[in-house]
Length: 394
Ligand SMILES: Cc1ncc(COP(=O)(O)O)c(C=O)c1O
Image (tube, rainbow, N blue to C red):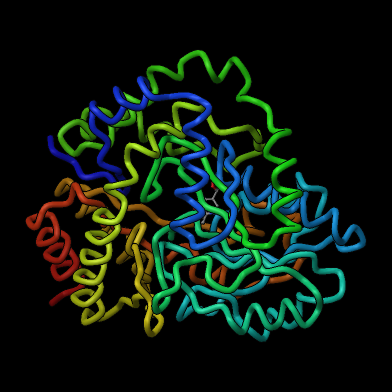
């Protein structure tokens, strides 16, 4: 049965073949140049994952300000950011979110940012660029650095400025499910010369992925490519589903980018803009329809923002209605996912300082994310809207 996954990147056999043929150390240089140009930053440094890129950034910053030990993170979003902070020998301070935008709640940010803050990490969640001038001002007031998490938003813009747009640094991810993906990979970007010197040494010091994980690697890309295609995804679903149900990360492995991933990313890059353009259109189309329905909220897209919707988030008022919509979508061949079902401190209690963070806790189980990738056909969009209208009683 045709089944549409929540995230997918159109990779072709030819891309993998050419990536194998052209793979080599020179491709890493080319990719650094491309990533820096895309983010309009002077420097890009490659890593085996977005988490590794963030880890390199935190380690580099720590060398400038060794007396600062805290990193501010949003309490709703990717929980494993907390593990990266911990592995860099630092402490997470969670900030509650604004339920309208899913960005930081400014009052709470004032409470958690202070003299011990090394960095504030702001996330352009679901590919919706957030204006961060106020966040940057608060960070700078106390001498902290703003890092923009562009893992889901590479290619997104505010006005004519790509993200990261105001932070001293940013990082991207090429992991599964990202808009451009090589089944893993990431990069740290900055225009700061001093920071870039440190990052250069951090990148050079990264190790290759442990051999145990290397062994099956040649099989992974073709399987990944097939598993994302709606014609095959149904057949792969039992396997993919089991793989998706893994518990939160207990630990992270930091490594360098594989040469094959660098050359695959370069093969995919010319398609990156059209992919983002389609994601933007699909997200806006669904967004405009769904926001008219009762019992739902769509996060506000900031004025002048060009979102690249890694997924389209829909916030329900009731988890029973969410579950009904999700199972009806599934029955009609459309996958969706609750993201992220728990706030960060509900996954890693040590991050929470025993505080309750009501907006993050309240929103977390009520966000259903919908696909926006280029494998969606017009009739899939109609199916999605039909399911929503039927379940929400219009
Ligand atoms: C917003 C965000 N930040 C960071 C990461 C971590 O990236 P990676 O999986 O490449 O380590 C992810 C990946 O899921 C993400 O979505």
